[in-house]
Length: 361
Image 1 (cartoon, rainbow, N blue to C red):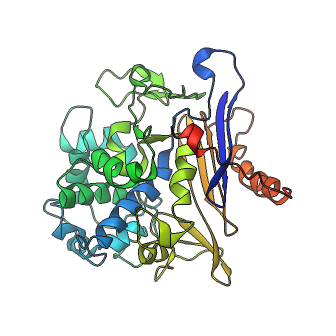
Image 2: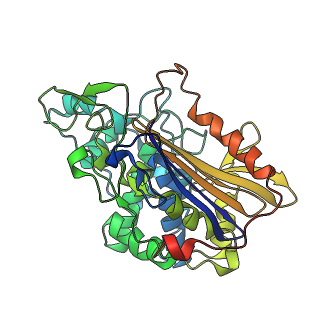
């Protein structure tokens, strides 16, 4: 890992923004505004867009997803019972641990459908229509990238707009966030200001049928299929600006106080180890109405974490590598969560400045 970034807000003010580089190569030099693949931190963004549509009266959380998006003829009729809320809370019934995550099995889907690579998201939907659910909708919590991919299609259907364009218009622009965009699979298609991703692994390309071995971050998965669950690029500054809109629910320019509160609500099932999955966020109630909320992201070449604390602190930390050859259990990056909480607890006086004007300009 040779590039990283950290941003911290306190009481809505950006008090720290840093880029970290452990290499002198120009394309490894991270700035506070450098863009990283944020992977599953994309889900809170998608959830916010869905909740905003609810605020606007354009969508109901109890609506079945198949009443909005055509998912084809389903082998399992229970798919028609899956609601928008169940997708948000990972209660749709697809268990990636018991079966597999269709967003990463392009070759399997290609073979089953008799098509050529690259597999498109529409192909994934067609393939999934022919599969049984792993459980009844609402019966258990099973983290589902596919469920969030479907929420992206709900947003497109309701708004008659592209997913990326709508989120930029309805969520990011009101917050003054202008750099965020969807990323691309290939290194030559990097966005301006985007870091270079590293991995010790290679994989067979899923972008064409050549069978070529490629660096894992650049073609071993089809990044363009992952918009609503994992395709966003953002800086650490962008992410804490987004997170800070939840700090003062009555003043948020993008969501109502009721929708923000609904985002933290505990689902009917799925609480474990003192936390649960809300609408796009993991939530740990602390008593007295206090809570910590967070989401992480992980893909070959990137590891990310966004944390919102009960005391008005938010932080985002981003890295340009996930695997660590010195740590075969891949625990090195996760250790920073406790380290950042400890570092925050050691601060006796926070700065009074606000750097958003400098880094969002």
